[in-house]
Length: 210
Ligand SMILES: [Zn+2]
Image (tube, rainbow, N blue to C red):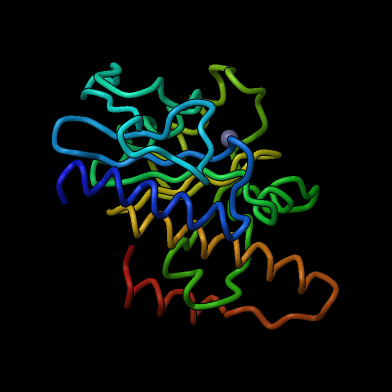
């Protein structure tokens, strides 16, 4: 995909997520790997109205080449790319249901959500919780980097998900699957629930390796 088509795709998918309430205000950010660096949504921009021409372009070292200044959360994206070389795009949202789950007291920090559906297992699989650190704390970057080396999706405590994918579409669709699964998890919490069994999860992971 050309750089200009990638810029248009970022703006189109960001607007789609904004219009469906997956992101709001100036929260959330997207990045995509391109031939000579990255494209990243700018700081203070709203996903509902991105100007493709003003999307930040960074070189391989993370320096701004053109466009507006990148999101202050760029370190979340860079950690994923550096720890997972096959990453083509990263999405980070403050989507309501995922954030709600990230605030629960009694969740398993090694894998926050149970295997509710096959598509969740195929698109996310395992979702570790990154402990809470205030914005800008170097320990947040360290913790994300450590978990990104083993997982393509992580959930920041009291904050939101960071999801990488091979392509922009992969990363967006996996993030949406995570948000909908968080919503289902909260809907089901007062009902006796039959999750997929360990054997069913193992069979899915063998058939559809991520
Ligand atoms: Zn954030």
